Length: 387
Image (cartoon, rainbow, N blue to C red; front, top):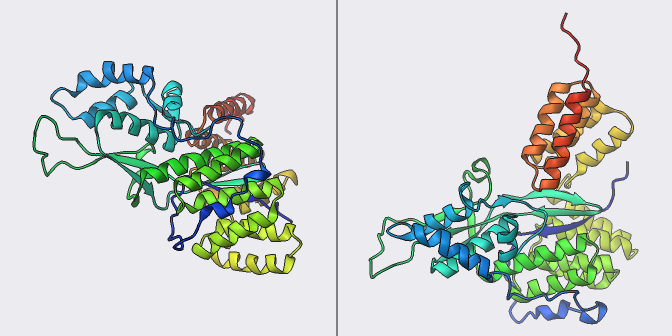
């Protein structure tokens, strides 16, 4: 079976490398190939506070600060079920004001929103990229490899008070506790957080088919942090989708030279070289890729989907189970594993997997879809009396 070639985009990942001295990132930009963005692409509104946010800070955070921990007051005001209660939603990367208005966001949006309030309160912020916390998802022919970020807050000094040396930073994370145990983190600069935001917007607008906007978001991400290699990969994918293959090849080979063990740019390079008709070179890079990554993301899933089409539900079940083993928190793998179990008549396992799909959904639309499926499955199930 021939599997689809996919482009790989990376969201949130802080894969910084040492950029050669004197290297000018602008050499990879070609504004003349793209139309102007449909809306302003700037850093000014990422952390910006609006009137509603200021009023909320005065009315809900201020009263809890007297004689207490400002950090705790901030956390309770944003995430307590009795107050704003921000919720996780990965449907788009929002700036601070958008996340506040929606009362939801992905991990980067919630970090940005929390930091915006922390800046206003005079709290020092430390941004952290979490190692080994990647998830995959796919839309059409693009695979998204997503990383994770959180932040730590330190208590500021007030009224001449000497800071207690026993006080430790408060880490605020938006993953469930099961996902945060034993985290290893790398501190990143605010410039990198801004680059991550812009890179995410590039990936999201590209997925919506807005290639010109995606180009400008990726371009500005690189300008914000030229060491953030993820944005270069995104820019290369933009060029690929736009048909500018030589430009994409040049960027991808640049990334591979700096991070030769990263499979994502190599995967994209294989696709680019194949489209350029240089199959022998593409094959050589594909052999390199296999040494790094034997089975790429969605490898077993695609085999499972083909098995579902062929009504080989046992094989589909086994393939989807393999994907769940290596990506336990991706909702779609659980949903299709549940579908395979249902086709095999194992209704208990089918319900269990759909429940896991609901639990691991990252958007309201996904949760609603799987909940409806679970209800439908339960109502249609024929119960056979025990003998």
